[in-house]
Amino acid sequence: MRRFKSSSIPSTVLKGAPDFSSIYVISKGKVSSVQNASCPAPYTSPLLEHIQNINSKHIHPPTSPSKRTMNLRDRTSFKPRSLCDEPVRMMWKRR
Image (cartoon, rainbow, N blue to C red; front, side):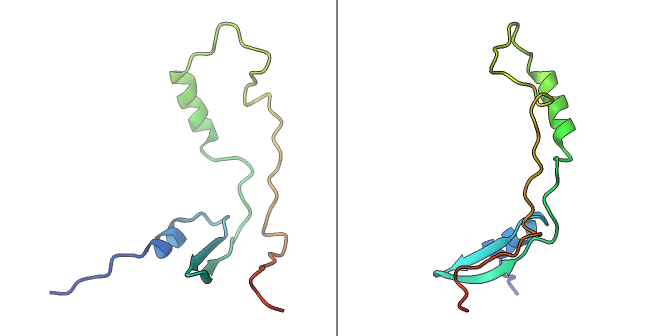
């Protein structure tokens, strides 16, 4: 009978990570594996509309909204900084 190795946690994390995130696997105080981001983070979530529809069905707005409450539409959205455009400086590398 042959047993297969169960997948390690680092390989599972590397496989499941989104393309826009850089993954550094550190083992025993040393970097053992690196996967750099291959694309910038999405400006808005593709699931945002779906989440808003679910929330609007389950949550009823208060009868008298406070001044501090803002809808998602009223909020100013900022474009996230892209790490793909900037070089990553690794502190553990020697020059």
